[in-house]
Length: 257
Image (cartoon, rainbow, N blue to C red):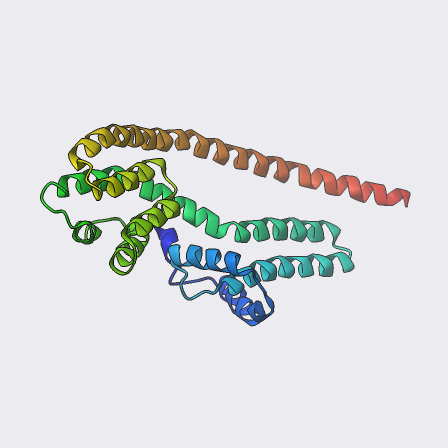
């Protein structure tokens, strides 16, 4: 799951050419500042810091254009079935490329959600002996998972350089997980004099619910994977057996022309 966090060291030739073409055409891509900044943060989160938002969008267009061009060439050459196949593959490849970052972030967020119970417990226990939140976070960073490290690094940096409450609220917005919202509200409250022991005692119940929910999600995913694999196998068999029949029918229809 965490492999999605950083780009593969060895890319396929196809991916390298797409990347190169994306760099060439990126100068023609114009993005709105808000969307550009949002996409930049997403690329950084999945480990694609060297890629610009314009390059990512250009890669999506290049992917679709290559398959569309192949489809047109085969259509002109009267290979209509192959041409339709190229168009369908191109559509699937373009959609997959467009949603690539979203899928990677979903995997990273799922990993973070699994780690949150441990993080909150460790944080609550550390507050009993240490009141400096930055030191607590820096110690936890040494043992945290790779998925959580990116958001934790940003939080630590913003706590050191900016406003305490604003840094916590931005951390909450980035993760967008209910239990983190409760944690941030509690940390802001403890900074204003609320007893943190009572707060973390109450939060412990939410942690248990989150841990049980994460376990249930993992169990629910297994039947779906099996079901998806079965559907793919069935579709493959149907395609294998029906393709020759369709070709024979088309050949037979040529007699009447």
